[in-house]
Image (cartoon, rainbow, N blue to C red; front, side, top):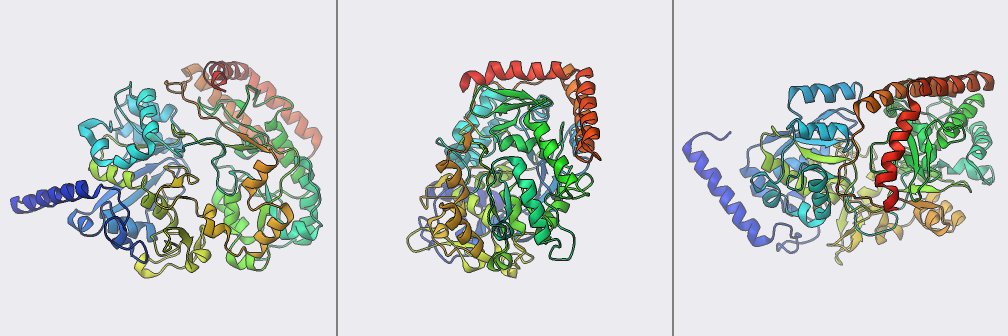
Length: 596
């Protein structure tokens, strides 16, 4: 705190000057509109929300970010840390509940009555709603906080604000905003989809690019790929699959993803997921444990892979970070997630013709989450005990500006990306080496360390990256920039485009009608909160499903697999599985299916 009358008077004077100049400039103007050049400026020169002399005029504060999605805990490092220090005189201390003991961390902080300054919820379900009821979240309308300090949130995500107000604030209070706000219809993804599957393209081509009709057809192909390259870059054994268990909730998450390759997802996209799989664009559903459903299809797929020596034996005990490191080392040949490939698809690997690329199967119907003007279920909020709500809101507001979206994702303007003399974005020479998340050294003037380590560690989004940036008239996603699409492709990308006859994976799925696009759902009410008995049953059943799922995958033979499957179904039903499914389906039938 600034002490003394003289210092208080000075602070008030500076604030008054800031309010006056911000009002005159419009608060969201681009550097060029403020009289500066649109090219070649440092982050300090181009900032328009808290940068330059204004940042220096404010006392340094540390914002505690309690993120239920973060995979990192501690003080934000690197280029993102330096950028927000220069712009806002803010440091970020991240508390992550997505790591070991996550749910216990949430319970402890809730019981302590303080969720920190900036809060990121993994869903708008029980934790978020309980936090509102317990008075742990700030009403953004209190003292005009949102109107004064969040103008770009209102401008660029106004429908999401209104949706939150109606769903969770009784029509008056605003306790947060959903992630990935998007306007329009159709798929919301960039060049790639959320899911693959992707294979080591170089090895697949060496095999003559065999046709893959069904999911099971990948297994013999991967076995031959493993024989082609039995050792990784460091000399470790290769596998078709390397799984992880730390993402598991009430089921084995990576078995559930198989449903998302067939147009189904967990839950209905609006209410809590429960124990059902629902078609994203029709009124069809499956119980998670349906005999011929996609969840068991996923378990059997991994069981068969293990029988063939294609499954990493560490899969049950390792975490996502361990599996990611194995992808980076070349130990893994199959990837469910295109964004996970990035650690292997480095400039060095792709220049040598080695890399992952989409290899779809004929029966695929991939899930697209679509554009949602109401925001997704991952929620940004501010703790009711935030030390300086106005500063927190100013930072969050910046994340909803064109500048904030680009810089929070791709680094300060002028480093990995820039704007040309026609006002169009492009990737710099440095950016081709650093993006999307490579361990490329960062110059000290931008924060030092590596580009990967300096990335924004909060792990939540504001607007859909495929949304059009009004300042450049190009999407925010650098992969969709005209300059990027026309840039000389690396050998892997060039080979893939020639083979597939399209420029991007998303174009392939659209062109071949292999996409199931989710519709935005808004009912005006909050998602259902399951009654206590359903929550209890779901939790108990979930523990059994997780335990038996992994046992089935690693069963010694098919007889044991089938025995375990029968035991799982019997135990789950004994714990009330049918009651939970009925509750899930009833809620979906009342709220989601009428909107399809």
